[in-house]
Image 1: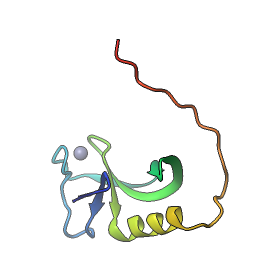
Image 2 (image 1 turned 45 degrees about the vertical axis):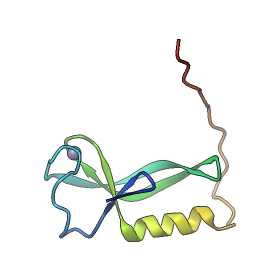
Image 3 (image 1 turned 90 degrees about the vertical axis):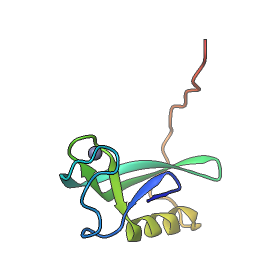
Length: 92
Ligand SMILES: [Zn+2]
């Protein structure tokens, strides 16, 4: 299921193969992800995800996604502010 560009994992029992490559092997990992919130990039670190062993696609549980959304849309002060490099892709 795609939602805001994220594939949500609907509980371990309902999702047994990767939607991208069909692999059935996943590793639980903490990942970082950049979201665009009101036009600004926001980095969320150490998100628990199920990562496909074959293609590297990351799946998040719905509950995890909800927590992230609450975090990034709240007015809570971010853990840290980082400077990010930005490139615009140029078509020759
Ligand atoms: Zn895969």
